Image (cartoon, rainbow, N blue to C red; front, side, top):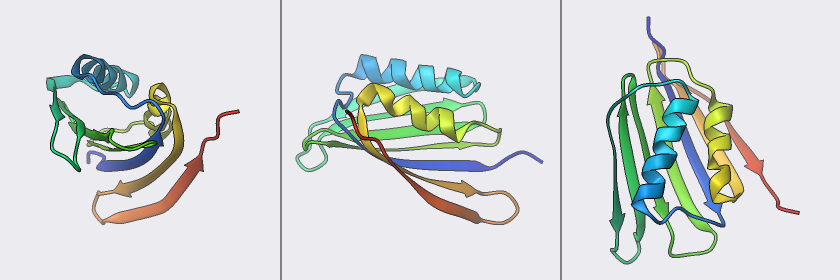
Length: 130
């Protein structure tokens, strides 16, 4: 039976990614870091609609997907993304991959979507720069 892991992350960051080229590399590096295989993408686009201004990216992996949106209109910027996979991956590695954007706060929710819909504990990490 395959895994059914869904990790949702909400982060506040000081240095949001704003360029498509950089977000594509970030997504590729994340997929490699969690030992997955890309089947399509990554695809990125900058959204200029007021109130939703920022960059979106998605990548299809052999076992499902990674999707992200970074709202860059406010400071700190807001990052929301998720990783869903039918294979095992390290939630810690995914969370630590936000370091490039200099997070000040990271919250995550892990959901095991196997035979039952098990919502684990909501974990909050506060990262303070010296």
